[in-house]
Image (cartoon, rainbow over all chains, first blue to last red; front, side, top):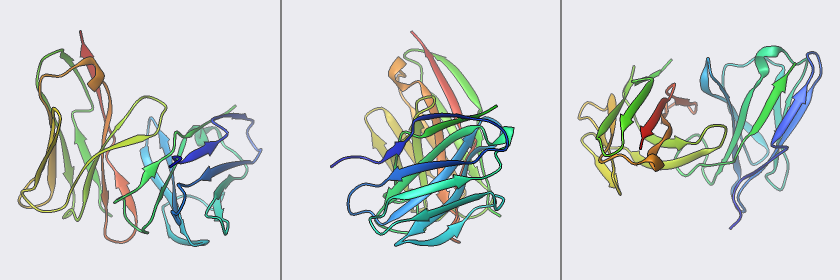
Length: 114
Length: 110
């Protein structure tokens, strides 16, 4: 079975721009969770989608949004980028919602905002 | 809100030495997970603990959840360079949100 894939792996954007990251889950997994990892704040939960519906959300501003498609692929969008948005963005997929149990993580997208 | 605190933040050990990483929760843990991460990469699942007093081992890594279910420890015996990386504990906070400790960076000197 193919693992969780994330595209692109690396991205450089300028302040004020917007960015879209993509995550393809393991086949059969309907839950996709997104995380932001920075040296200062560590790994923080952004949101989770299950069957195209957002089920849970972390404490991030509305500039961070996401969606999930009928094939369970998910995209995450960040608008009006700030320098502090530079981070490793990880997604994880699983069969179940609302738990780390059974979550498989992708390799991440490294976003640099200049 | 629930928080996880890991200690130490970083650790440098000589190859062959034992070491322990701790993860303390501000609230009762309903599921505690340990992960390893190579810098800039995704998380690799190590172990999950759910019951107070539960202990699990895989190769030279042992994890334990204390009886009161508010602290977990990860112990590595006879460390090797392959054990180097960032170790993170994670938990289900029982409201659907998923939380993580700040991570412990481990270096193993040959």
